[in-house]
Image (cartoon, rainbow, N blue to C red; front, side, top):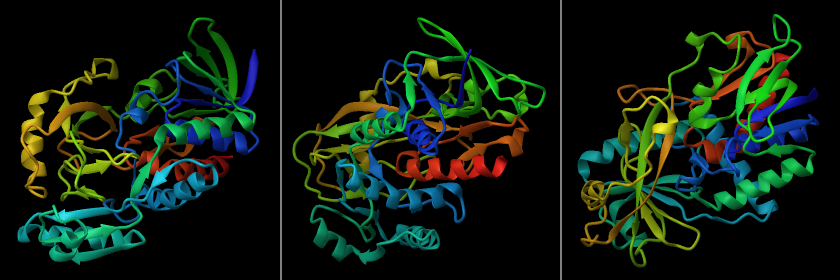
Length: 378
């Protein structure tokens, strides 16, 4: 039976970053992916925004890893020829009643150590974006866009250059600890056309919104320690024609998400979203990614609060994604959760739960943080 140092499950952006880090640390690493290619689920269904770390509670992992990840991602992309565009972001108070909310966001961002951020007047915001309507705004200059596919392709190349191997269409069927306390590692049964069994000292669950379901397949992991998965769909609508904006435009956040915001792609085309649509389902295979055109009615109302010039019929249903949440709709936003041996007592096992946004921005920092946790557990 083949034996390796590390197996990472899930080849989304976080799994790719983690697998690359493991290989760079000198571990013989296999990356398992159930699909036929990398990054085809949540990592292919996001806005590609490089976040600054503005909204998250002080000292949370999301705050720390996003601020660190923003810097690491820009540095990585510069040195690896991955395209980025530092458009900058305006968070807008649509009217005077939202200025206190905006001040609170600024205070949170400052506490998180977010660089290049400041409050500006409504007139100053309109000088930057003449089509914008707002009473005040916050300018985040370190917010931008990354070519997410190019970034993931680069991570994969780095992983393989460091000796890693990726196995597509290879779902994890089961994982069994070797020995009573798993100090001998895990024996894995892997599905697919050929199927195989391998042993690994280190097993890392980076399956995104499927991470709780995958954890159920790990023998010896107490079921009450595995969080329930919740599914919050985000729908996007594209703008027909050339957008009149050169910055990303965000409203005041709403429960479960950041509100219907305007983002620009690498070519300067605009899309709006995501909204928040909680799905009453139990598992990922029940997700319908179709964008209901009727939801556009709510988009027009939300967008016109900061862009009253949006014309009827200008928005077209585009695509959707689903956030990897481990908290329900009536709870405060959850944090990234690294579930390691200190939590479940299985040596060598790390489950990554709740790695929704800002997972893309934080990916390199997530990998480095996990490496620290692994070394601390040895």
